[in-house]
Amino acid sequence: MCPSQTSLTHSRCRGEHLNPEPICRASSPGPEHTSSAGISSAATLRGEPELVQHPPPHTHTHPGMPARSTFGHYENINIGSPEVLEQLLRQEGKYPMRSDMALWKEHRDTRRLPYGPFTEEGERWYRLRQVLNKRLLKPSEAALYAGAIGEVVSDLMVRLRDERSRSPSGVLVCDVANLLYRFALEGISYILFETRIGCLRRQVPAETQHFIDSINLMFKNSIFATVFPLPSPPLAPSALGPAVPVPAGKTLIDRKMEELEGQVERGKEVSGYLSYLLASGRLSLEEVYGSVAELLLAGVDTVRTSNTLSWALYHLSRDLGIQEALYQELTAVVPPDRVPGAEDIPKMPLLRAVIKETLRIYPVVPTNARVFWEKDIVIGDYLFPKNTLFVLAHYAMSHDETHFPEPERFLPQRWLRGYGSPHHPFSSIPFGYGVRACVGRRIAELEMHLALARIIQAFEVRPDPRGVEVTSVSRIVLVADKPINLEFVARPAAP
Image 1 (cartoon, helix red, strand yellow):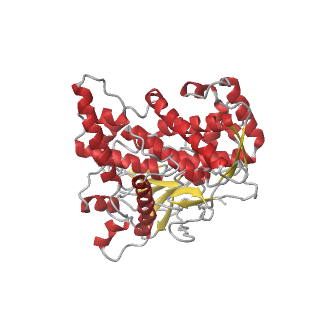
Image 2 (tube, one colour; image 1 turned 30 degrees about the vertical axis):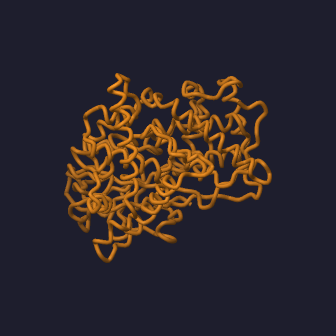
Image 3 (cartoon, helix red, strand yellow; image 1 turned 90 degrees about the vertical axis):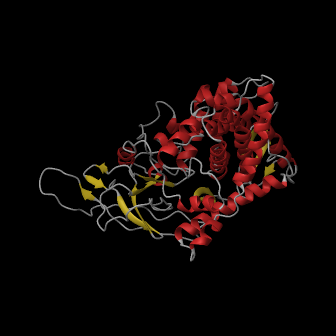
């Protein structure tokens, strides 16, 4: 079932509420008039707020037109067409906002914690992003972390072998997503803090487990506070849970500061992402605390790496033809006596296509938002006043058969050159677009490509022998509705 554009959203930005007729004709020849064409109210919430099933199909009076809806006590303009989405995002300006972060800001203000790239706005946000983008956004810069990522992938393989060996069959791994979640957290922590935190140990350190549990509680409660206003404003910050990420990050940052001071005194060259931030002199220590903590939050909750790898393995286990083609591509590029490296990824188009197709079917964030507070926005014949909240229906667009025939089928070949008709470039943008695009995109892609290549090189992946069907649900991000259990059968002579 294809979800509507109104599955989940955050609050609207500060400013006036939408007028009763928010979509108005822009100046054009002939009489001016107001139109409500394309406006619908179809937001449907199913189940508990932290577990939202796919909403019903989206509808428009005219396909592709912006549509109005409500979610909780918020009013939104929904964008469900890639053509309209392109028009919108190309007008986003220098300081676009995702949506109102008032609850998150209050949480930080109450605890006197610094803001980062997700809670800052305007010029301060832009200055932060300019500094944070360096060493992350370009593929050549992401390649600087290939060694660190490769080290974490190697530990993932050790843990994967250990998990399967402890099963009665010797090949079954239960709840693959949980293992890959720990892998993703270990990877982002290693890059941000240049420190291993033990997520892939058989026994996760108590401090690390407390951090993970606190993040889960924070994001679970944030949707309650968004949809169902709390009775007392002072209670709102506590709804997000304890302020663990910043203090935990602060401890690691302070430790790194001491190491850097010693390195500088010894004349040693500074390397690594946190080292770069601290040594650049472009951010205050408070800004580094806030920025790294929020980058870590993003790495934990969007779980782009872990969710995408879980779904990719799930579908490959159910289509052995595609899995075999991927294995053959891998063996043609990588000799049997070594493991895949970052330099091999450009030579494996099917590997990259598998990740792209997985992200199309399961965009980690099914909807997100933009607030254009700098200026009015014109889309086609319609004028939207500034401070309008637009909800971007990524799931609906990436499942639209107009752009992706047989949208529910796992067909990685649709991303290969010369296969089928091209799709609209904005019909699937899992990492966003423009200045608000995911700052960790290149790191996430490198992690997913290297991990998937290593797993397929070492194992044939088979489905849960019990034949369990898994589908997706939205808990702000898109996740599996039940644990994904898979068999990992060792290939002969795997490195």
